Image 1 (cartoon, rainbow, N blue to C red):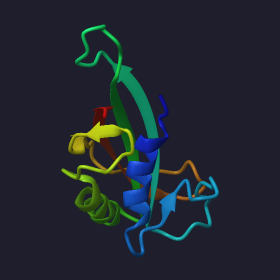
Image 2: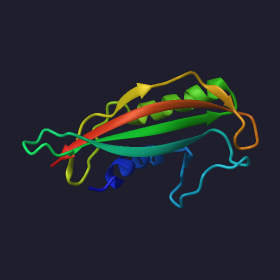
Image 3: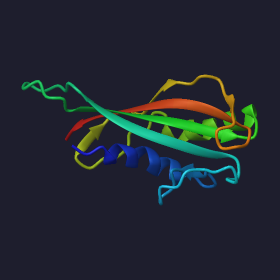
Amino acid sequence: MSDDPHAVAFLGRLRAVAGLRVFPDADGNTPTAATPLPYVVAWVSVRYDLGPTLDARSTRAVATATVHSVGANDTAARITAGRVRGVLLDVVPEMTGRRAFPIRHDDSPPARPDESTGRRVFDQIDLYRLESLPG
């Protein structure tokens, strides 16, 4: 089983938004202190849960996208997070070899300051979930 279709589903939708800078970019680069604001960083992980099979196999993929919407202040971070929500929430992506369910929004703590790149920015972190079955 490949995790790639799930990452492609999330990142492809985000990268298709005009004017939205998304990391890691197509070359795998991540933002630096010089990266213009706002931007989005999305990390995708996939686990396999027990699926609806008679042989008790783990076929249900559960992908989580941890999306960081980064802006100069909390308002900018929330606006960017809104753009992300608009392109992901409730979408049923096309996935070769998989039957996808609608993307759901699982968590959203408040935006907070972050200085990990060497400058002060605000980071709104949202968790999105995409589940799929073979087929």
